[in-house]
Length: 220
Image (cartoon, rainbow, N blue to C red; front, side):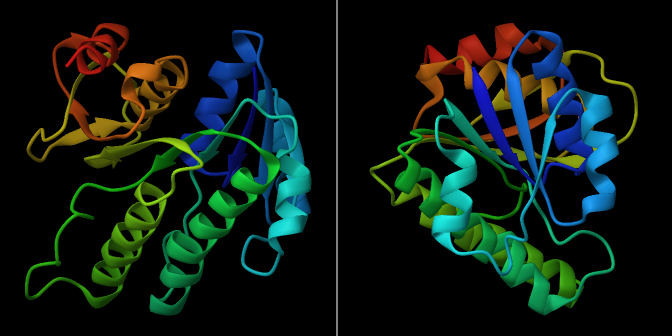
C-alpha cells in the first residue's frame, strides 16, 4: 500500500511510519518544517513539505494522488493557542479530507481524541476545551462525507510508555491511558480492516491483542 500521513512528524505518526515501512508499505509524511525531514527518512517515510494551514486543496491533492489510504494525525501540539486548535485540528483535517476526495483516495483514518463527542465540562482549561471542540467538529465533518471510507480513532490519555500490544477497542471504552506505540499498531490494523469503515472507536490499554481487538470490532 501507499499511505499518506498528515502530521508526519507527530509522535504517533513517526511510530506509524516505522511500522508501515517495516512491513513493506510505501509511506509519505506531510510535514510543515523542512528540518523535520531527517526524522521521517530515518523512520522509512518520504518527507513531503506542505503547510496544511496555508496550502490549497489542489496542493495537498497532488501529494495524495495514487495513495491507497490517508491518515490524519496532525495537531497544533502543546504550546499552541486557541486559534491554532481551530486552524489545524479542525481546518487542516477538513482540508486533508477535501484533498483525499479530490485525489480519489477513499480509505481515510483520523486520529481524534476521547472526549471530542461532547461539550467540555465546566472548568476545563480553555485551550484544551478548544482542542476538544476542534476535534469534534473535524470528526463531524469527516462522518458527513460519502466520498470517504472513514474510520475515526479516539485514544484515551496518550503516554510514551512502551507498547504492550494489549488494548481495549470499542464504540465506548471509558477513560484510561494508552501508549502511543499501541495507537500506531491499532492504526496499522485498521487500515487493513474494511469492517471498521464508518466507525468511531475509542481506544485504551486493555488485555486483548491489537489484531484480535480490531477483528472483534469489525465483526460487530
